[in-house]
Length: 327
Image (cartoon, rainbow, N blue to C red; front, top):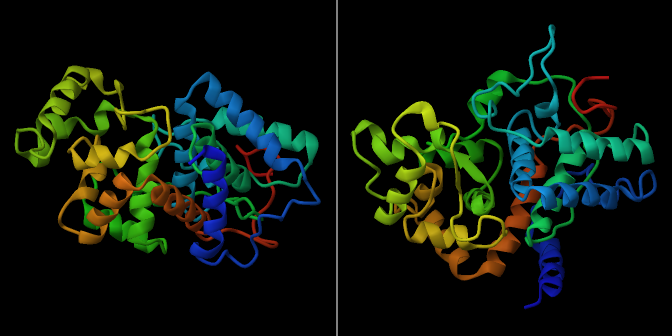
């Protein structure tokens, strides 16, 4: 199936498969107040991803880490000040989340066209979709109308965002706490078909899995050998980067799930999805490995569901003129 036709079918299917959109959100929210919004976001994201393909994964991750803390309210974008503590220094975000300059560039372009109109939270949601599209992934209709938080929560960022060392039960619990299903969990994990991870996030799997003093027995031995060349036992290689998907790291496809079937999931939180501990998760991994269209459809639906986590709407919050600071 050609890419254009695939995107049309995915969009049409979403109209009947995704959960009901939060009442006050609508894809047409800015139709009159900022009609060129989506084109503005697309242009900046495409330029950024063309210069550095990894940026697509970084922008997608920003959206995920934002929505899992207080809901999709752009709280992750707030900088620390002498009187304000944001979320950027939380353990899951420190030396990890990136792409803030791209969001700044989008906000600047949008403010020039539509001053004090579009929230940073909606910019994050649109940038996530455009990042996926830039690497040949699926399209979906993004519900809009979120407003920006004036507060942040370092504690929630430390506690609510799933860790790369998570077990399957821990992942399911954290997703269910946000109103997301096992299908949402497995489908959104497929975002790891793009991007890179630091050695420090998976080193224990290579040398001291579960404090056994040995590698994770579930790791493919050839994959293990390659990873050990990139990630030494010492902390000197903490920031060495490895592709989350060794088959096609710069293309959004279903090869992540194929990797899991061959025990080539980079993070523990990846490989546990193929575990026999949960037949639903394992079945979805198999389904997505064999049916890329199904993965695209479910991923798009899950992204809408994630975007519906506790948005601020109506008169709540504000429309920040700078995504880094409260007005």
